[in-house]
Image 1 (cartoon, one colour):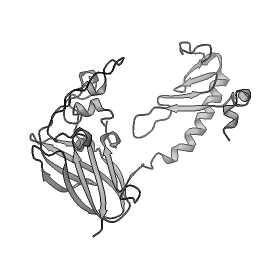
Image 2 (cartoon, one colour):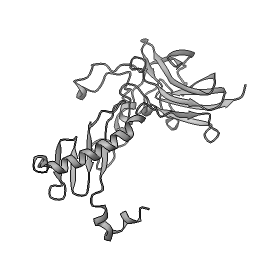
Image 3 (tube, helix red, strand yellow):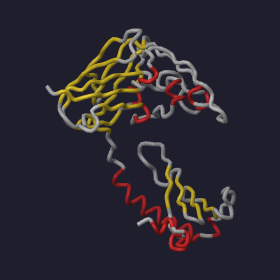
Image 4 (cartoon, one colour):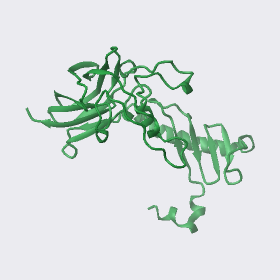
Amino acid sequence: SIETFLDPSEEPAVADRMLVTDSQRIRDPIKWRKTAVMSQQWRLVNGEQLFEIKKDPGQTKDVASAHPQQVKKMKVFYDSWWDELEPTFLQTTEIYLGAREAPRVTLTCHDWIGGYPPWNQQMVRAAMGYRPKSSRRKKQEENEPSQADMGNFWAVKVMEPGTYTFELRRWPTEANKPVASSLPAGAAVPGASKAFRETPGEAIPVVSAGLRINGDVKVTALVTNDSAGVQMSLALQPGSYELAPFFQAEDGKQVGAYYCIVTGPTQP
């Protein structure tokens, strides 16, 4: 029961309770990367710096050398936490397609597996994956590699046999804009330095689209100027797949479909 943790009079009983916050932002986790072990009194950051949080909430003074036993205690807790989770790291979380409870599934580029996915709407609007990266990422390559170059894909699990329909989109359905069109900047948000929607949506000169499954292109289609989405169908058997639908621009460069709506299956 969590009742004890909600009762202020029971605080001594949970004073030593520890939690881990972990912000890896990479596919394969690395031990102690961007990690903090937290208790009510202490914060152990990246396994090295220790802060007495009630006296120093701003975490300005590292007291690890003065409290080696506390550091050791929190490291032991972290090691146990890591050992419990490590066997699951190779278990890719798959998105189910064809489940009876969800016959229509909308996939977004935020869930691409591979390189550095467009994880917010500013990146989607800026055509990340097709346009050069922002200058503030100077240490990285000048041009953002394409989805195909990075090997980005959605990890999906097909639940039922049959024919599935894939609708590839540059913009979400709600925008109601053609694949090759731009998108106007949205209104500013009071109090924010700059809202993601303030970035104008860049047009990609798309001429065709394709459906890549497990590295092989299975279906292609031409894209017309007024196409809001490109539909294509494919028969699939139950199992796990790497799904990577893409657009091809007039310069030959490929970029992943930022959105893909999957419906089905229809039975053979």
